[in-house]
Image (cartoon, rainbow, N blue to C red; front, side, top):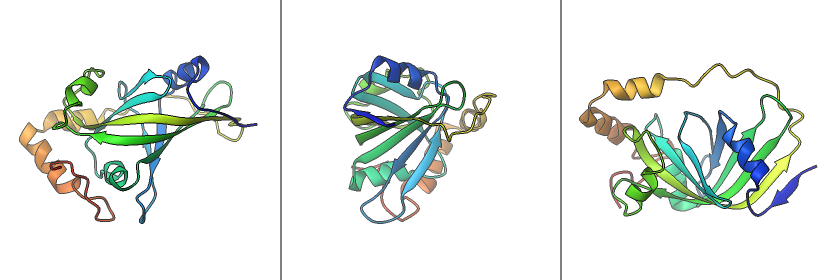
Length: 182
């Protein structure tokens, strides 16, 4: 039932653009595998059939950035929670782009919301796997959560940086994220 290709096609792109949520999985060479649900409008941009930019906001952890420093593999998964069943997995290689990096201005220009940005992930798709998704339940989308943008807008830039220095420089396994240093 699975269909594996080496790039996104028009149907895949339309499917991704209609989803409100996706899941990201990464792992260091040793340590915990991380799986995170992601959403928020204007954070996932398809650049071409093999390249994605994903804008990542600050949060309680920074596992993905830490993991990619050790092992650049990333899996991104989209599920159809309404309409025809489908699971779309993207098997990728990724790297972290921080505000200090030369590609930052070019990459951040793809997004309308920039203030809460922590990093952009430069993602290269190696394989695309479509599978049936018949076991995925149906859900009605109510809306995006506004908690993170509201929280960020209450913080000064200094408070935001202090929070990230406290919560985002090490992974839960104690691995460095290099958020504020090379």
